[in-house]
Image 1 (cartoon, rainbow, N blue to C red):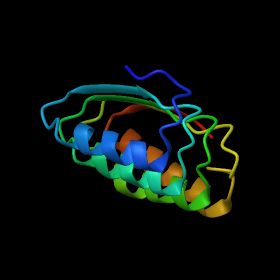
Image 2 (cartoon, helix red, strand yellow):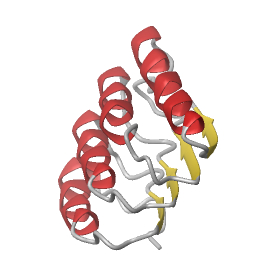
Image 3 (cartoon, rainbow, N blue to C red):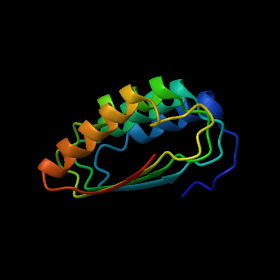
Image 4 (cartoon, helix red, strand yellow):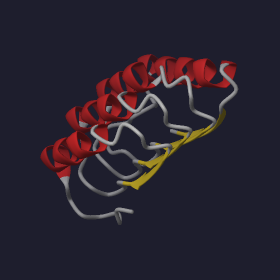
Length: 128
């Protein structure tokens, strides 16, 4: 469990993401990365890492209060939306200073991601 407010930034999240992506047998992951100065690049890195965990059944990501913008939210949704084994998913993007999930394109991509996951039987709780 990672506490919020560690100021990891995109570089720190890249390192963390590399470690997460190597945990291929992981079935549950909960990360509180709120207030860690993540930007678009960090959101993309995290999305790619999570997408590598094909057997993941439960995922909780708190990304509130970062600097994720339209592009980061859109790319996260694009890469993480294919997790077919997910049964439970929580994503919190509210409070990002660059407006993650508030722009038309990222809202559309996030909504499509949630629809794909729900169509596969996943219970989703998302805020942006």
